[in-house]
Length: 433
Ligand SMILES: *Cc1c(COP(=O)(O)O)cnc(C)c1O
Image 1 (tube, rainbow, N blue to C red):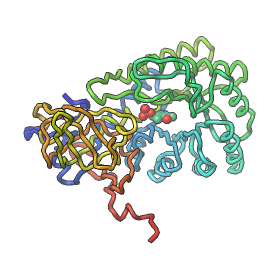
Image 2: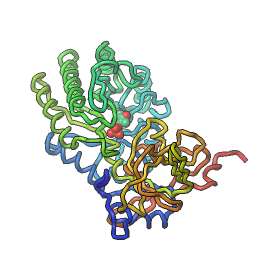
Image 3: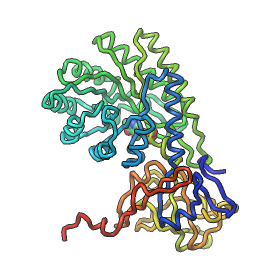
Image 4: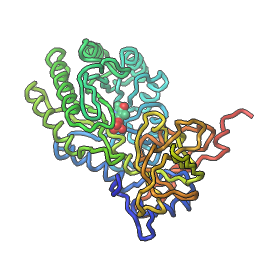
């Protein structure tokens, strides 16, 4: 009935997440409110871990891509589940450090890490730095020398696979700000250079072909290309690739239109390609890394809002306004993303009314849902937007000086605030008085 498996309706006709009545959560913590189901996050982590055990004999590591939802809480949760972490900025790295995350399991990404960020990563002994370009390589080599260490690195490679929702093409990807390309020899040259450098150890390869991907083929294609490149590096440079990081990007169900492949399936097919290419090229099967973000947290999260004014413009459109919007969920205004929603206090009623749900920001594009079917809304109702666990809180802003919502995690029916609601004091915190 709902896009996420952890949602149900109780006898009061209220939406339930995990074992918690969402109407009660809204009453207790206020709205807008992000709610994350910890049990489902953990379950999602285990799907990937079990797939690595099953298809790679445990020779690999799942890295949680923090950019989907980064907090001290999620870092601790990922650590408890035995995952590594993908971080993309000094701020995400700082969060992982403060959460006590094991630094040897951290992979630091980004296409333009600053000298300060690289310094911070090296000083804190981050396990791997995923280097983007020559400039960064030279900068890092000097920083590692200063610290007297040999920094393990891998480069972000553009495998030339462009993943789209339902098809893929092998062109165009060279035109990307991320990483180094294979087809013009750039990737080979950078490995050759790094191989000779004294303070870095290029022991792995990395690629990430996109996000919200529903096809298996682009992942298989990328794995094949990367393994062939590993073969080339061994043949031509004698360089052994010990780690293959295949990135994230596994699609999730936002609405009924989405039809994701079970994650276990992707990994099974990719593992066949990795193994057969390793055999063909006479190289060892590297340790496999994958970096799911969205598929770990998206379905575990919902956002609760209170309905305010309703504007039924006859013959035009019916607008239902809520007390949040693009500040807590900028995905509609950025990508016209589609979501499913339900009136949480009437969750069992038929969705018979076609409405457009608007946020409260001063932008006409500040919508959460356009022309969606909902239960008949009234002021004071609680609206739940589903599958908001990824790229909502992490992309939130204070536009219009609206404080960011709190985040509540529910585990085994027990709610706990994991990020507190911002106050107006927080909003002016850095203003000089
Ligand atoms: C965004 C990103 C991920 C996570 O992608 P999802 O679609 O959230 O799984 C993983 N690795 C890298 C390098 C990324 O940029």
